[in-house]
Length: 266
Image (cartoon, rainbow, N blue to C red; front, side):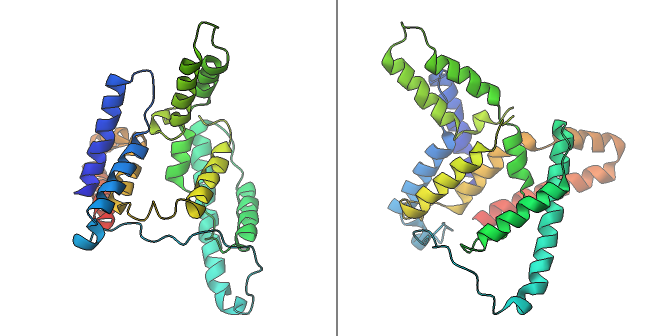
């Protein structure tokens, strides 16, 4: 139920923002998260209904330290397996996106990046790094031209534009960074990784209590709505014309994946 409410809330917030605030972009994800978190906290839905929530988040950041090497022989086989799977996955993501966007991907560079990230991550107890096709594909649709246009309207506005109007444009552009309305055209640099890391640090050190009541179902709905633009329904039409069997496999896979995401979130 919360999954469906999250999807409706995201679409409703976006539609209302486009109708009543056409010149600005409202971060509907943030709005839905705040509302869902407040409802979950006020009515204590985790205790009363068993709603799955984020729960307690350990505060602070782990101090860097050398890993315990006493169990290296015991963990070697699992570590090699995880490293191999992550490399194959990351290389496949790089090659797929390279083909989509017209650039040549180099698997050896992916291997170097994963190795350096793993070496740095072991000092703070991080999870093994790996590529994410959904996140990479979403970021690959972001537009750098939007920033160029917005920057021109913010910093090079004519003198007749008031200070508050400029300030409103700054807020509008800032909110774009948190909205999938941006997700329709190409990110020019990996600066988003620095922004994401900064947000995670702030949440881990200052806002760790505020994320505890957030329902998993609402987080899942945000992911599904954000990835909607990457669902290749044209491929389904192609399968329907070529082979009904392939089309049936595509439909079954789509329905099962969506059902598992919503059921696990609830």
